[in-house]
Length: 83
Image (cartoon, rainbow, N blue to C red; front, top):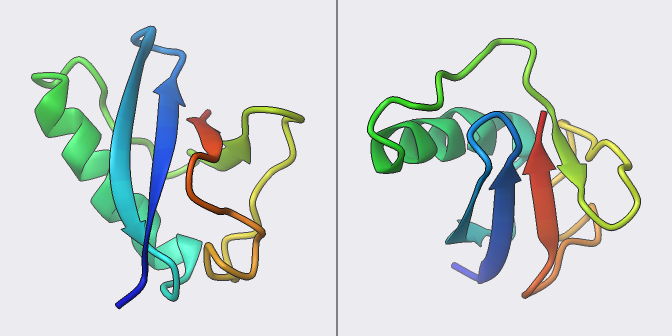
């Protein structure tokens, strides 16, 4: 499995986390996993929401939930944000 190292910023708690994500899994399937990891790492300071979206931090574009990270153009070092 090909993995990508990304930086995910959570503005609600003013924290950023680096994590590996699989390149070939859809964002829709990844979001619950990412949010649960962030919730645990933040000691429940971050509470996931059903309306959360993943965006690119450089231009604010929403990442299509039906595409994989690879298809979305996410590469190693990409900075993302969960809103």
